[in-house]
Length: 342
Image (cartoon, rainbow, N blue to C red; front, side):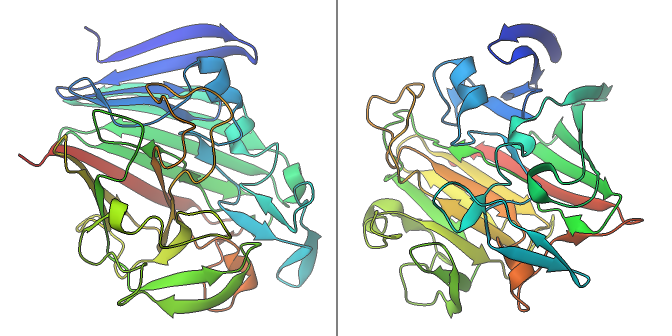
C-alpha cells in the first residue's frame, strides 16, 4: 500500500485531486479544492464528520475540513482600516458581517498540488493558491501554501505560509469537525479541555461585547468537562451550543492547548498551535446535506476546533489583528495528535 496516493476525480466543480497520506495508524484524504481534509482515520476509525458525498463536501457552506482564509470567523462591517486606509467589508446577505472571507475565500478555490515528498517515515504534501487583490474585498495579492504532514510521531501537522503585495488581513485555519466516537450522532459523551481563562463574549450578531474570565463559568474548560453537562447551558444567540473564541494562555509546540476525548471509544486528540486563540463551534445548526454515519439532523454531531487569530481582531486594540505586510512571511501551524487513552 502506497504511503502517498494521488487520484484525479471529476466532480461538479471540475477536476479535483484527492491525495491520501498513510502511516502506521493514520490515514488522511485531502482535496485540492479548498485544500481540505475530507477523511481522517485512526486505525480505521473516522475522527471527522463530513458530508456523505464528495460533491456535497466540496460545495458545502459549512466548510467541513476546508482551509479558511483570508479571514477566519466573522469580520464585522461596514469597514476595516489598515495603516490609515479603509476598506469596505463585503458582508453576507442580511448580515452585518462577512463569514470566513466570503464566497471566494480559500475554501472555494482550486489549489495546485505544488509538491509531495517522503521524508524518512514522514510524508508531506503542499497545496498552493493565489488570491488576487480585492477578492471578497481584501487588499493585496495573497500567495498561500498549505502543507499537510504525517509525522513519524503519528501526528497530522498543518502548516500555513503566506505572503502579500499590500498590507492585508491573513488569518488562516482549518475548519475540521471532530467526532471521536464509534457513533457519530452526538459529541455529548466527549470531554473537552482548553488551556484558556479568557473568552470573547459576543452579542446575537457575534459582535464583541467584552473579554471575560472563564473561571467558574460554562466557558471554564481548564479541567476536562463532559460536554453533555455543558452544551445546553450556553446559547448563541438562542441556539444551544458553543460558537465562541477562547484566548489561549500558552500557544506553542510543547504543550497541548486543547484536548478532546471520547468516553466510550477511548479515543483522544491533542491540539498544538502557535495561534493565540481557538474558536470552538459545536455544530449548533442542522446539516443541509446528509452527513456520513450521522442519522440525525446533525446538531451537536461534531465540534469544530478553529485555531486562529481572534475573529474581527482588526477592530479591537486588545486583540491580535492578523495583519500581514509586504516583505513579511506568515508562518503558522496546527498539529493534531490522535491516540488511544487505554
